[in-house]
Image (cartoon, rainbow over all chains, first blue to last red; front, side, top):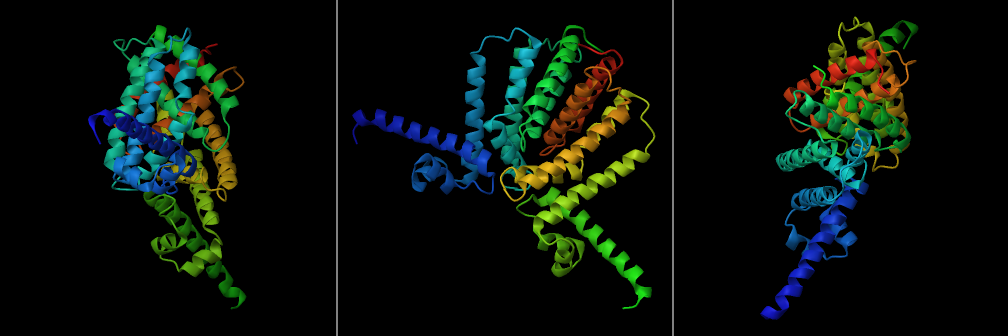
Length: 198
Length: 198
């Protein structure tokens, strides 16, 4: 093929790659790690198994890349949003990060990594990267000043709470209880962030 | 066998049952749901597969009973402890509930239940029972007065945070960061529980 066709070919390749990544997150969230093979994902994406393996040589490559890709997409969307007007709106946005399909997929991957040696180190590194980026986003959303003693730990605790709320939403729709917890903890945070406790 | 041997026989049966339950939690925490079969647990407990199936006809029976048994053991131990002197000590105890093998085992079961229809309803019911009991324990440990508006949600948020801290400890030893988050949030809770925010 000549130089003229390289452009569209690369575009097609990028589209295939993106479809595989998005399908991988969907499959992981719905079927768990043991139910998510490269074959299942390729079928869901409407791509041949060979094409899938061309993009991602191993199952581990595919799923860690998928969780990373979707996390980056999410960061890009959040970066472009206007700053929330209230602590409560900021807390709602932070907690919302842990109730969608990305969290479900990531949770499946974290839990699988705790038992699968070939997955462990890669997922640990990925979790650290996503964790740092989510912390940065939370600080920005809350307009928090981390130079004030305790504020960093306050934000970390909020992210831990958000992760726990995501877990509580795994088997049942926990949205009504979650809304009450978010309202109360947003009030606690409002006090904590404007007037540090020590 | 005569009446005289019924006692020791029942004792042996109880010992076998307990060994199976404890082994099931250990296996689930270490190998995950897909690696935890009745055969693996029976072997770990030093019990024949037939004896294991006599006690627990299905894999689902064994593992839900195991998580419930260990949760009840834990409640019994906590009930006998003296009340913590400070909010920080109480928060440390609550968070400690989510960093041991029981939480790891329960997490594996919750996550498996999100993808396995035959496990879903049983684990949902079990999670609700354990959740209510853990909430009751947290209220007692903190000496919290739930008739004060917001206090119930404050305690719930603490339990969500504790669950999130447990998840953060799954792949790496998160104890140093966790201690800082616990210290800061114990201080915030101290203020919130004595002087309600609204």
